[in-house]
Image (cartoon, rainbow, N blue to C red; front, side, top):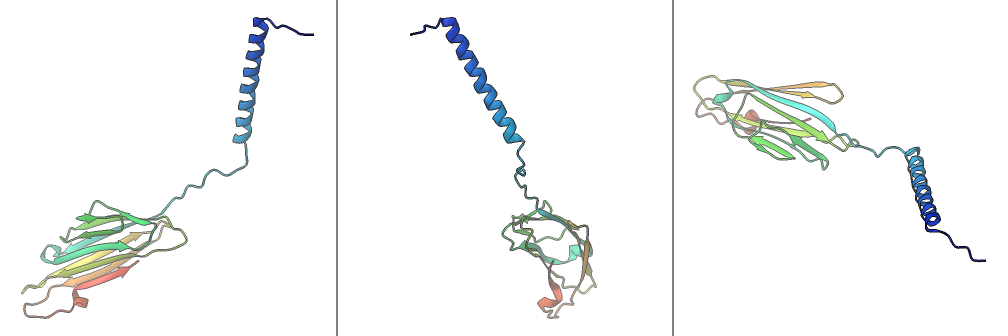
Length: 169
């Protein structure tokens, strides 16, 4: 026996099938959103803040300050330095303050930050420059390093160890 359906019955059947498909998709989305899977892991870097403060007669000294790292997943951010890069910061003129942030995305390795300063002054007068380095570690520790540079008399032959220092933190 062949049954003929009217257009109204076919339209009604089509609408019911669409509603069933929509209901099934909503139910599947609801089930997937209630899964016990963890959210995607967001990697937050270790973020340490540094300040290098120069006091005294820093305008009488010639030299440079540079900061670098070798960490593959590390970078610097700063607007205080003359030359900035993701792995290196440098300045050949002495300002009273330098600030920068060190970001390390590799929590399993503690890559060092290398700070290098050369400051030389040849003068008949006695000049000195104090270099203070402050580090605010992400864990709340504050580290402080100090170095004093003094002027040399004309004709003296200072060695590089007397007017430079390199610090690895």
